[in-house]
Image 1 (cartoon, rainbow, N blue to C red):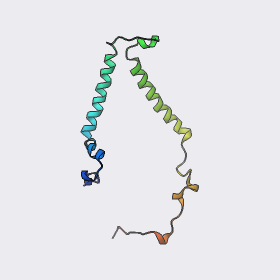
Image 2 (image 1 turned 180 degrees about the horizontal axis):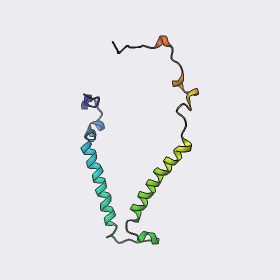
Image 3 (image 1 turned 120 degrees about the vertical axis):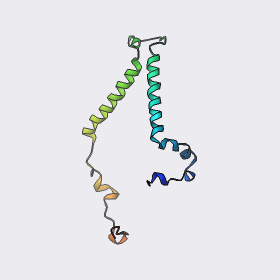
Image 4 (image 1 turned 30 degrees about the horizontal axis):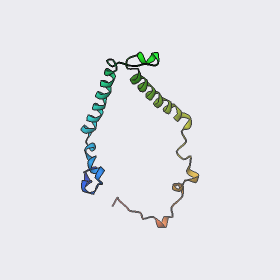
Length: 115
């Protein structure tokens, strides 16, 4: 039995009880597929609605959907590229980090789990 199965809904706050249905993968999949359907419907609707354009590029059907998609993908790619020069070693803050200090051995409560 996993830790998630041990959760008693009665011990959760109101919002936690209301959102328990999101724990099931099929419900999350339904939300994702619903969002796909909504995006596809809005993209298709762009071919049929009357537009009052300001710029010539707005005449392209689905321009804003494509623009949003490619700019979002571009942001992700830029963030991955920035990791190369922004990333620090794992022990970058170690000399000043509280967790890097040695804990007094006499204050540790060691438990032997092997027998």
